[in-house]
Every structure is written in C-alpha cells, then in structure tokens.
Image 1 (spheres, rainbow, N blue to C red):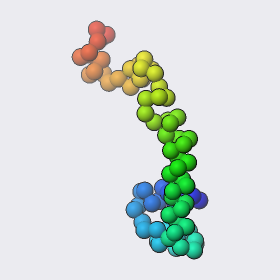
Image 2 (cartoon, rainbow, N blue to C red):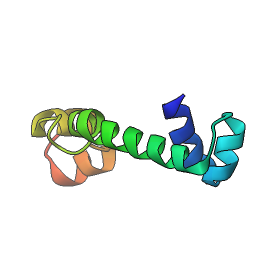
Image 3 (cartoon, helix red, strand yellow):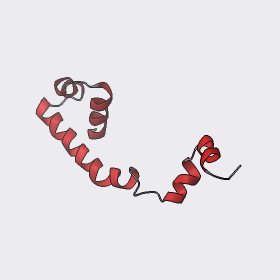
Image 4 (cartoon, rainbow, N blue to C red):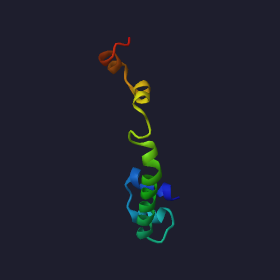
Length: 78
C-alpha cells in the first residue's frame, strides 16, 4: 500500500489529504511519513542497484544500447 501511495503521489500529484481519504488513513501527516519511508527505501536498495552507471560496465552499455547512427559515425563496423 505504501508503494501505491508513493506512485499515486508522483504520477497524479494528489495532495496528501486526498490520498489519506482514498486510502482510508487518519491524516495527511501519515501520508507524508509513508512517502518519506518509501523514498528512503528506494534510495537505499533500488537506485544504487538499478540506476546510474554502477550496475553496467562500459562494453555492455556499448553493445546493448548504442544506436545504429552512432555505430556508423563513431566506429568502423558496418
């Protein structure tokens, strides 16, 4: 439920009061605490492992993500 609240906040931009009503919670302060907890959890576990350049080496990035036009312009490959 916490992740659903966080995603709704990010996608729809609803106020904490509206989210509290939708999820049958007591108040907007609880929504704020939930959002902070989810944000911290994502920063600790998800971001470091899945975003940025730490999770992929240079050669894999080139092989899997280089565009056709970049290959033609920057390499000798056909």
